[in-house]
Image 1: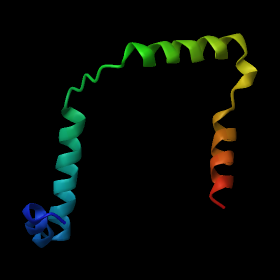
Image 2 (image 1 turned 90 degrees about the vertical axis):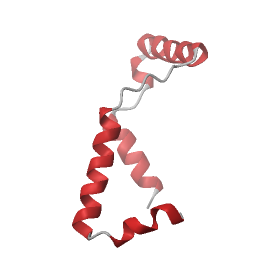
Image 3 (image 1 turned 30 degrees about the vertical axis):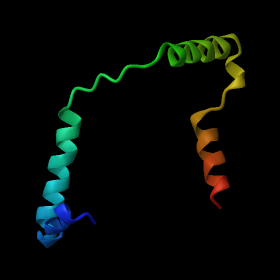
Image 4 (image 1 turned 60 degrees about the horizontal axis):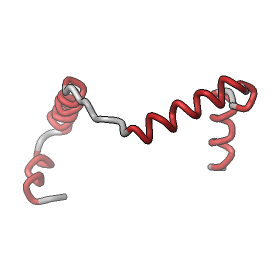
Length: 73
């Protein structure tokens, strides 16, 4: 752990949990406006167009989960 944060480990478990919750809340409260590049927008639009032309080409969420789980077994 970096030296400037080492003191945080001296906090009680409850205090560290509260700190994590406060940090998490602060991230959720931030207004982020990360720009998506024109290239990425075009790729997403192209993928949507291909999917709409052939919806059977995609996988259901259940299929994706099963596939991912089978790769970790």
